[in-house]
Image (cartoon, rainbow, N blue to C red; front, side, top):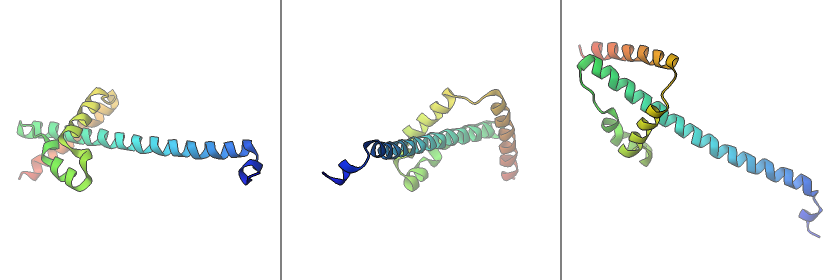
Length: 119
C-alpha cells in the first residue's frame, strides 16, 4: 500500500481543492487586473482627447501616438488593435453618472493644464 493510499482520502481531496481553487483564483485575479488596466488606459486616452478638443479644437489619437512606445516597452498587448478594443470596451461599459461628473472635472483640469503648458 502506498503512502498516498494511507492518507485519509477526504483530507487529500480537501488539499487538492485548496490548490485548485488558489490556482483558479490567481488566474481570475490576473485577468481582472489586465481588464482594469485596459479600462484605465482607454479612460485616460479618451479624457485627454476630450481635453485636447476643448483647448485646441482638435483630437489627437493618443493611442496611436503612444502605441509604439507602449508596445516596445511592455509587449504586444498594446498594439493599435488592442488599444482600439480597450476603447470600445470602455465605451460599451461607460461609467455611472457620478463617474461621468468626475470625468468632466478631470477633463477641465487637463484642459487647464494643456492651456498653461502651451504658454
